[in-house]
Length: 162
Length: 100
Ligand SMILES: Nc1ncnc2c1ncn2[C@@H]1O[C@H](COP(=O)(O)OP(=O)(O)O)[C@@H](O)[C@H]1O
Ligand SMILES: [Mg+2]
Image (cartoon, rainbow over all chains, first blue to last red; front, top):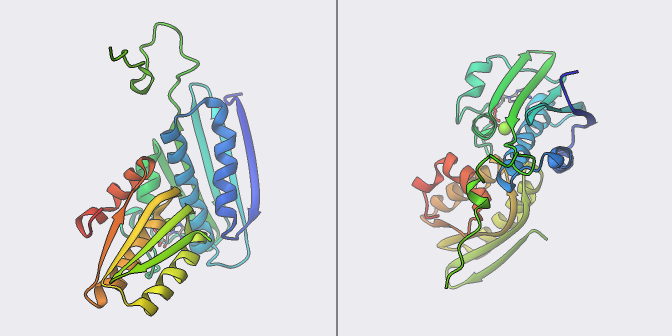
């Protein structure tokens, strides 16, 4: 086996579940002892992918969204967000920052955020059958590091101000 | 409620709190736009001090209010962005459009 822990979550395509999905993934990766920023990055990326499944994949209609998360050796977190919605015609174009097929309040930044907040992003989609978004992020070892590793910047204990 | 608004001499201040995602942004938008309609402010201040989380729906919320205020020559200021939200704000480029 190449993973240390995994979970799968299926839920209805309802916007109230955006909060649920990112809270669940956040709780799942917590044993890796991520920094506040690493956790915020993961929550934001999950929120973007799940929101896309709801508003673009299922276009606010009924459907099931599945989120799988895996923790692999070396602190690698792999997250998949799947829908069986309408799919993406042109993935390359969809990934471009500011590109959106719905005007109004969409910023067209969802994929740009996933790309910049995670270490990798892959999008597999077929029009008419759905979309799978796969994201990876390495949680840098901190509390589990061996003693020869230098402390992270935010862990340096400040000198006493005399 | 996750939006509290105060109007004072031409300025409408909206204090946002909690998580801003696609779900909550829709409700926030309705409240803010309702108050803009009533008060007709010259300036809108969006105060993020109590916001714990924000994804790109928050950027959409900001941009939408910016467009609305611009229609009648008004302006938007973004204040008190918490440190964890700085990255998404920077990535969005809104800092070139309004005061943050
Ligand atoms: N799960 C999905 N199913 C179908 N289309 C999608 C999906 N996710 C993204 N898209 C398409 O990709 C575009 C860009 O997505 P994104 O970068 O998140 O911007 P936004 O959500 O603001 O439109 C969307 O406008 C939509 O056309
Ligand atoms: Mg999106």
